[in-house]
Figure 1 (tube, rainbow, N blue to C red):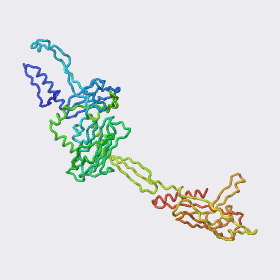
Figure 2: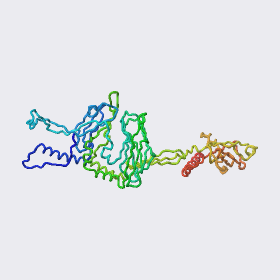
Figure 3: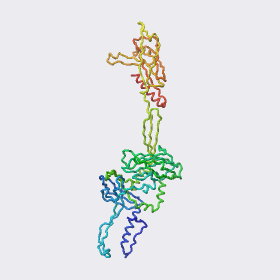
Figure 4: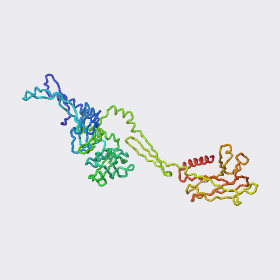
Length: 555
């Protein structure tokens, strides 16, 4: 239908005896309609107010629920009852290609209603003439087989800088970033890949050039996208971050030269014909204030009629080709977020935390293990859209003390002389040095603790079993007590060979002692040095090791 101008306004002036014609009554209606529509457009914007959900009924049929919307020149669109239609019966749907995405749209429409005989027109026409007695404010559903340009939406024009890197053969690749930034801000750059379900797997990579911006994170001047092999989506987003210059009042640039971009669809490489460049203004005032300046500076023509012919897209419908026909695979409702929020709801959201959240930071944290001896790591990601920090802390695993302690026993035979009970070591010597003993903890410094082990068999008579005791230091301190051992008083010493992972045990007899034992059992423990571990960890682990050793001694 023709685009009607909404202004200037003219209203009827009534006076006694005025002859009212069709023109006067039409002017009366147009005056009130145009004023309301102008305010709708400027105060509320355009989009769906309520309802109008689109669902797939079967493989070829969709249903649109009742709802209310305002179009791009402020006219109300009302769907009073659910509508169910085969996709092939909707205006604009063609049968030339089924492996595609189609867009179900709604627009304002008027229809005549209640035809009646026109008395006045019959006087100038010989035949019977009928006119509609009512005008039904209705709607029109239709199919667009090409997606609207992202930059065609009013708020995208105000807030985003969008460029198209590639658009052909049911594939569109765009790059989006904020239109304005403040000095030092970290901003998100979004690479958006749109395709049909039956388009072969897409791989896209490119290197970019910066003027004023700095890299943040792991992008390092290159971005890559590889579609998952089992994916069933028609839109993918890859996000990376850049940091704005530290001084305002200028511009920063992000360029993607065509020779540095590589696109593969299926197995076929596809050339990128044109280079693109995005120029972003670095402002010294808050970004919201700068966007409001653009909003206030737009002309009335731009505000009211700039998008007058634009319809509202209710759904993106993804089709699969099945031989000579098709099936509906997926329905994405409101793919371009054309909604109108209630002013009351918006006010309550801002009052109950919307504005306060801008001055509040949130944090999430996750810890993961690193190998023992590795340096601790901390990775921090910041998400400005929700004021959130994500901390990932890598903590080295503690030293496994059970792997750093070894124990064992060594037995030395005794020889008796006469009935005096005197004794000495083999061949009459009172000193004994063992062969090298491998402790099994590898090379490096160790600490060796040794003691004399005795098995008390007296518990067998009471049915309690034998008990082992280990004596450290000079055992003659227990002489004359119930704990006096039946083993000689022996001094013990050790020699450690760090380069060979071995040690020796030395023993020396202290005086003559009566004993019935024929063998001395020596129990040893070897403790591995903790090396370069942090001091606090060494102290904590050493305390744990000693407590374990003490517990073992008690056992």
